[in-house]
Amino acid sequence: MSEKATLEYNGNKYEFPVIKGTEEELAIDIKTLRAASGIITIDPGYKNTGSCKSAITFLDGEKGILRYRGYSIEELAEKADFLEVAYLLIFGELPNAEQLEQFHSDIKSESQVDEEMKKILDGFPKSAHPMGVLSSLTSALIAFNPSSVNVTSEKEMYWAIVRIMAKFPVLVAWTLRKKKGLPLDYGDDTLGYVENIHKMMFKKPNQEYKKNKVIIDALDKLLILHADHEQNCSTSTVRIVGSSHAGLFASLSAGISALWGPLHGGANQAVLEMLEAIEADGGDTKKYMGKAKDKEDPFRLMGFGHRVYKNFDPRAKIIKKSADEVLGDLGIEDPILAIAQGLEKEALEDKYFVDRKLYPNVDFYSGIIYRALGIPTEMFTVMFALGRLPGWIAQWREMRLNGEPIGRPRQVYTGENLRSFVPVEKR
Ligand code: CMC
Image 1 (spheres, rainbow, N blue to C red):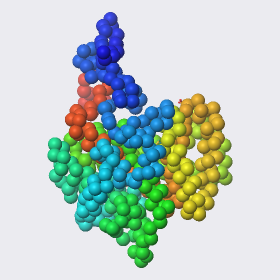
Image 2: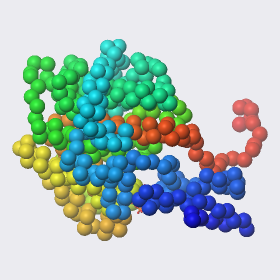
Image 3: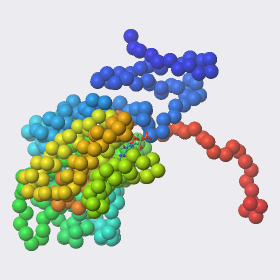
Image 4: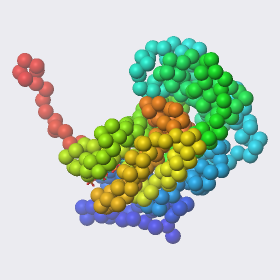
């Protein structure tokens, strides 16, 4: 027999079904609450509110578990490549060799971006933040691919996905090249997906591109670790924008804007800037720990804490190890790494952080690797967006295929009651 939850209000009792996920997660289904009782629930920041049922990513913040489609993040980061993970997230199963080859070759066939897009890029000053540029370019892509996707056609859905998987890396690379004053590039069909992205980003016009396995492997891993994270701020944005039946590219562009903020994806840039500031200030980590704990001080220890993880972010564990390896393999000694390690050690032993269950998150060490790979700080969140792309696509696709209704929260109004208009001369 299915379980029920009862709400009692004003002498009336209302019963609601309790639904259970495949990992035994429980939720009270309050869909009928307002119709039955006239009241709503309120939950700013949605700390207790599930917006959907989803079969893509499982996350247990207490135990520090993250799985894509049932596969642990640890195993995927070690054994898979980014394109396989993208396919897995979007279509639900790991591709066989033939499916992967087909997906990649379809992506290659769509990897041109209309030359007219260069004019839009040209309109931005070099100083523009790459996230603003990327979001605008993604939105601009709609003008060059105007037909909206008929979601009942598997074929149309597939090609919309292929198109954005193909063109997005070009936009990412162009965003960086514009910043660096390098000529724009379309990449190379003979390379793997991630290697091609790296080449598009960094190839100098007067030099031959040389593959560096350490760099490509590190990038692959970082992109996999960022590929999905269930209903976070940007993903919820993508789903809610898409729920109005806005197209895929428009929904993604909104997701990029949501990711930009320093409490979300923008934290990776903020972490590095924080570590640099601590270094420039003499490397006194204790001083900054004090600032983070001082309620009068707006400073937060960036890269620490998470809405869902109340234990180690499993992605942070993998990235920390990877940061050590990558810097070692590339022969880089970065004083910033020592500052990060010092801060982490202090925070993990500090009552303030322990009591609030604040652990390093994915962004704490990722910037150190990006820096070692030669990626400018302002591009860090763009790299996060590149990794998150398949997750956003998968979530948008799931939302449309499930026929979810338009996202439209309610509110509790706390403004003025009805009052009469006063003409301007009498105010
Ligand atoms: N430094 C100092 N104190 C903190 C921090 C921090 N980084 N994070 C949370 N706290 C404190 C906060 O002040 C509050 O204390 P109190 O209970 O005394 O008022 C308590 O911990 C709970 O914090 P909250 O802001 O209510 O928690 P939240 O779930 O709303 O916010 C968060 C989660 C990630 C926005 C927050 O921890 C934060 O601002 N962290 C720094 C930014 C960051 O690293 N963001 C990246 C998140 S991971 C990447 C991604 O997926 O987006």
